Amino acid sequence: MNKILNTLKKSRYSELEIIDNKILSFLNSNENELNSYYKKFLFDGAKRLRPLFVLLVCELEEFEINDDIYNLICAVELIHNASLIHDDILDEALTRRNKECIHITKGNKIAVLAGDYLLTEAMDFLSEIKNKKVYKTIANAAKDMTKSEIKSLLNRFNRINLEDYLLISKEKTSSLFVAAVKSLYEIKGIKENQTLIDFSEKFSLCFQLKDDINNFLNKDENKCAKDNLQGVYTLPLILRENIKNNYDIIQKSNEFLNNLINEAKKLLAGYKDSKAKEDIFSLIELFKG
Image (cartoon, rainbow, N blue to C red):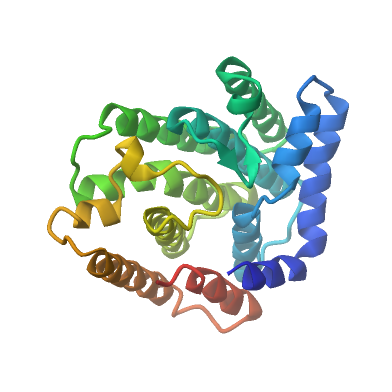
């Protein structure tokens, strides 16, 4: 997976470098006691999946990437990373990206503030975007992410069904992907393409499903917190209610995931063949079970 992802990122190196430099420049111009932590956390081992996805959407739609789009991508990436810091506190995780979580090294209080600071950075980037509708679009996504975490926390160790799981996943993961794509159309001042919005939701759901399956298999590369120990019901754990054999659980989970991937790809069938379309398909294929 990492080899293909790195190849895709390498082909957009110049754009991703601009994004990294903008975030780094902001950190350097706003020195605080946690800057050394931020520079490691934000730059060592981060996948940059969301920036890459937004760049691919821009290529697919033939959007020129301007400062507003770069600021949007920076904001989205910082909101995502802030949510990771807060998630790790809630999950009592020990590591993230093969490093000790900040709440382990500096305590929960500092960790909460560390996540909050990244959110304020994100707001600063959003404030630079000319179309102010973007601010509300991204704010609503962040609100949905928080709602999903509250819902998930209050329902830990309570059984949920597949429909509720998918709803929580959409709020937790899809909302920021979808909001980023919607914001592109707001920045360009054109009507949004609902087909691409729907694809963005399915793409991000595939990513979340793959992550949950990896967690069930203890293959989660980012963290060591186990969903079943935390009482978080994901697709494999929901299937375990009726299927006792772990092999069959994974088979069924992968079947569900692969069907979702195929549904997502069908949405882009009408787009003309291009390098961007090919690369987006390569990206979503990484999630196949």
